[in-house]
Amino acid sequence: MGGPALLRSRSVRLPPSIRDATEVAAQRGQAVVYLVEETNGNAAALAAFAVADVIRPESREAIEALHQEKIEVVMLTGDSRAVAQAVAADLQIDQVFAEVLPDQKAGKITELKSSGKRVAMVGDGVNDAPALLTADVGIAIGAGTNVAVEAGDIVLVRNDPRDVSRIIRLSRATYRKMIQNLWWAAGYNIIAIPLAAGVLAGQGIVLSPAVGAVLMSLSTVIVAINAQLLRRARL
Figure: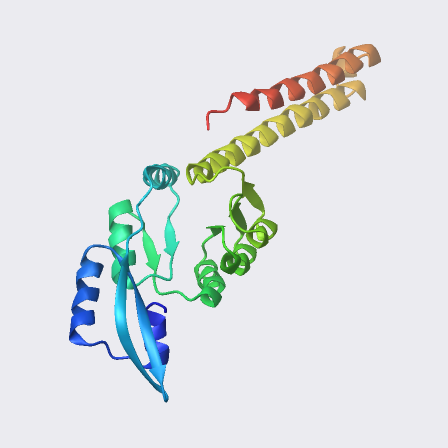
């Protein structure tokens, strides 16, 4: 049993009844799994099973949130191109790689990176592990396999795709805090050290050691408080 890749590898020609059923399933956005029997080197399709994945409401919200963050969404799937395009059109996914074999996922990530994109890969299966390692950032679903979890740079504890946009917003908020705190710390040193060294002593401005110590402690407190404000970030 297998999908379109099985038919190609065994050079199977579908009988008219199964071919018609496949076209109807594709129009409905359903994946098709074929039952193939091989005897004496000749393979024939005996049946086709239409399988439909229900699109989770949170998936739609997750893609909308990523688009709001100006992030392009790409889908990697082993399903047929017709099914993949139907799902992509429904969810407004930007780019689709369909009929991708498990060992080809990492190559697709490399292809995206070679075009100048920074790629974050989200996956939960054993076959996703190489792609998670190849991506700039691997995001593993905590409810997935242990191999995927080990390969991911980030592990989502919940099985909720909306958390992908949340960690992006959290990382951006964290980076902003780092820059702010760097300027707070650097600003003290840029101003206080020259004053303590007597650069403006001729104008009667001298920073005493006691005042310098107070300002140093104050800058540390400001940086700590500013970092704590990260808890208020709306994700």
